[in-house]
Figure 1: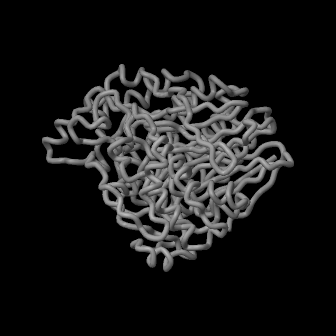
Figure 2: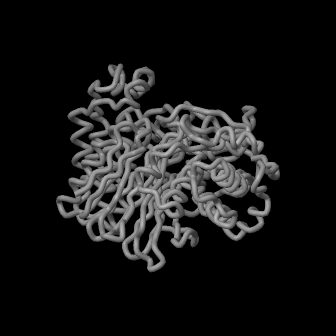
Figure 3: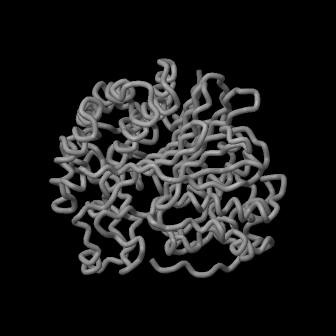
Length: 510
């Protein structure tokens, strides 16, 4: 179980205590939840390159009396050519070491959009802690240390060359320069400065100057449903957030048992997730209309007693970081930022040493598919932050998780524990989890949907097998996400928990 922390005047939850501390420092200086979220994310972009960074994408929900949604996911460059990939014999986007799976990163555009609309403090103040850590050094975390040894051998990744174990000091001077350029010169200094010039050169025709000049952040209409006496919100396509809402609607009509330890509880949640997502590959793309009106029909596919045969998916382990912040005025931010696969594509912009995501793996190579790889298009995204409001519209909770395709499945479990079963953030976040298994990357679950994987210590394995589920087990840890949650209590206090699976995560308050 994770420990629930309490505060009265603000709270920040992230996967790294250094990032949480930076966020709380902005609250102490008079900043709001958006200021705290930007500062925390910027530190994570330095200290957690295995999860996120300036070379990745961003989605966010903000509650400030009303709920707003931000899509800061990048678009494929003008040189995107699906025919060339098919001519190479590929039926999927390349996973690693290929610039064609690197849309223009949207993270910096996301920070700028959030800052312009909501922030109180200057951007330079918000980025100062991250610049200090990048220039002066920070200790490698227990999750970063073991992977940095390999990464340090890659082109452009010299910052990690001397790292061998947790606690080794890492300095990232190029990232410090990129952050300083963004703080001092804004968007143009980043996307058309050292980083942008290096990206154009590395792209070899994948991008043009116009691609980098086009902002990647858009304010969009959030999705919402009413369930368990609350409204649950998330981001619309190209985000897969609709899978969370659809699964919750399916589940609510199935009557889950009162005790989450019962195997029937896990069975109904698993089947709700399968019914919501079995056709994801065919229906998720950037202009899709989320199929929330299909909940009743999909619920009819579920057998409350047995694993159900579902229609075949149409032809066609993630590393991310989630953070949340709430300030003393009740503003809440639910923000998720990602490289996709760990360090992403394992390509690094050579001047700054910023590692580049591989979100392009979400594109289809099927000719005519609505999510087909092509110039200016956004890929289907696993990222799906969540936010909960009470019936009167006031903020109840902000939550989210890393986890690739499994993100909506993990959130389904946490939201149900929080809203239906009344668990504390520590109980809901720390409890053992299940996830749908299939494929080998964490981003191809829906190509096979082979079964269910449960964490060690979970009470459901035998009961799920009895109901016809192929079940595997895995160690309690990162493979089941890093979820964080802040709950606003009726008393006015804040209750929060950072996922113990992140090892150094922290829920810090003031």
